[in-house]
Image (cartoon, rainbow, N blue to C red; front, side):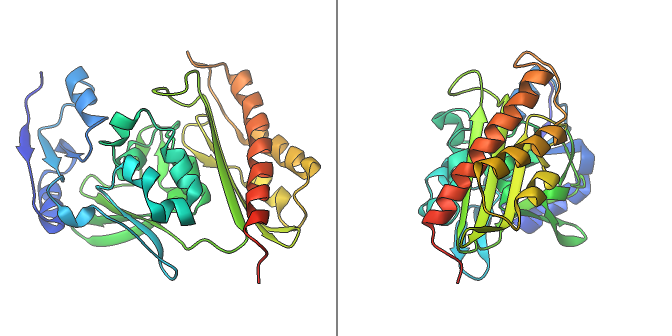
Length: 293
């Protein structure tokens, strides 16, 4: 097995200083569910592994009505899935988190790690995209916030610099009259990657859609927003016909590949089916939230 030096900073500033020193030759360890496998299989061969597990200030889930939701880099996927704050204010994120792998893995894996892994089929990523999440990155030059819509640049690749750390994820407060839903289609009910993942968010003022967001996973080199499909919904009631038209546009936005989990034509068709279902379910949930003032 490849040998490396193990670093264990106690503070965020110490972690950033070590990253500034070692840069691209280091890998950050949080939950470790991806990195440990990569090290074992030889897919990653870093000179240093930097564990942030002792940085206590990075383990939190906080919410207030002004700033929204803030999730620290060490918050596990299971903590997000079961958090009363997330389940109350951002239920689609809890829903998506619950589809990732198994409970045992969710107890170790971090939400920030799932984001940094940048897998096109990442289970939490479509939900985070429709919730307009941002990543707060910290590095030797200071910090910056990057919308997740601009965060992913390819399979396993992000805009993060080698010397940066994802310190927290920030989600804006939900607006009244909003509903969102996520559907993961996979070959097995657990411990499998998505063949297609779709998240949809709808905000209603009375019967009229005033905001819509649709995100697709596992059908492009990165998770993507189906912007034309979103525009199709805004300014009109969410009817089955409107959902059908938006699903057509979402299907057109997909750029799937054929692999062992499914063919490209099958994935493209499933985008249509799941997008339609997600939109209609999100609209039902939005109606149950009441009308905008």
